[in-house]
Image (cartoon, rainbow, N blue to C red):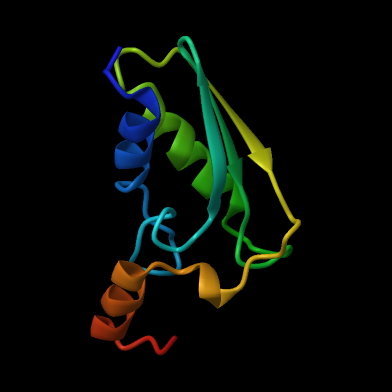
Length: 105
């Protein structure tokens, strides 16, 4: 297990891209929280809209990426809708990356 498991989880989640936007779920502001209990990771995720067609795909990508960490045995994803996601949750790095791809934020 890494020295700071929560930092390791966040770093791994930086590799999970939103299918509709060319940035990570972290930079997009979809990660509302996480908790590491031993080899279990609980993650609280929201989505850009309640009717987001990519919720299942994002959840699968998050689980698969975290399970590639040798010390993670279980990943539980909790969907969060309150507070609702807004574009203000996008990180500065995420905003810059979106601009480079021609998406205004």
